[in-house]
Length: 377
Image (cartoon, rainbow, N blue to C red; front, top):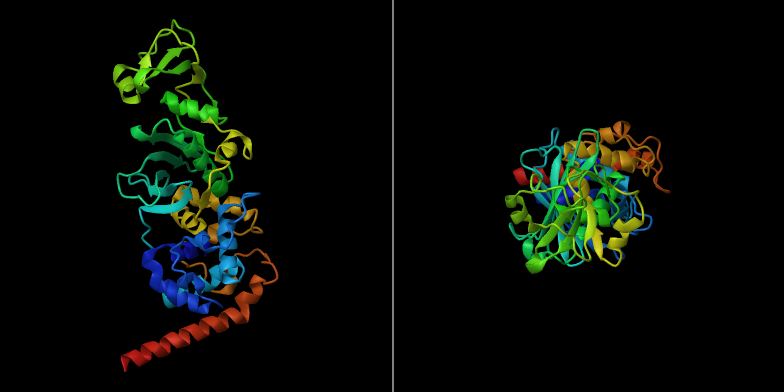
């Protein structure tokens, strides 16, 4: 239900269904705003960031603010008529790329992986308003396994934008995104690029494998010099000429003044959630997460959907995430709704799921049947 509603609001291909469904709302401003999933843009004040709520909770809270109904009530009303009108609704074809937030002067988007869409995706950073293919300035490659553990597989910043601190900004923003969506910061797979390792350690990540401590220093013409802590050890087997050339590295014999120590060729464990250098890096940065877009996107990543709702369930009174279908098929009738006895403020879901909901849906269907009958005369 929540997954389906987020898709209904976010995808262009769902606009007709959304227009029909919002006639059941007291004030159908979700349609009139023409927000296309960017709900937070239309709030008078941004959602609170302290304490940071799970992204699903933010989505429901934002829906509640815009519709003057509890968030789950809105999801129920938006998904029920669609389910009744389409016995087997055609599943949405999610876009390959979806704008999910802004960070300072940058746009942030999620991109599906063609080869492994069930477990892999990327976070893209581009200049605001310039999201054309090939125009990205930074990218984080991510993967989430069957156990729900998310990993950073790699990162890239275009050469002309290096030296601006974008590496730590990207990692911090992605870590915050993971925390808000899944409840924890990401681990990493084996990291081979020394400068990425340096960014990770500067944010509090710790190396799991400490056989290759090296010293990095800024050399001439933007080249980074590198030497093993034990100067006798030769790094050329791990960093041959082609790799050094691609990464702008130069292997030297002396570390020089101002060199920084870092572990390379290792997986990294994130710091404890909350505060710390990751959140400190984001202090002063103006950023927004579009909750509807994120819920819609993550709901279609097979390995990511379950941990997203598991984390949010703590704030949602035991909502049964496994019953939350992406095509609306869980909203057939009130008895099938997995509320777990939860009350949404003063407006209880049982009340909405009873006569009031049925009255609105019946009126909606009668009106639609009458209009279709008149059109056929």
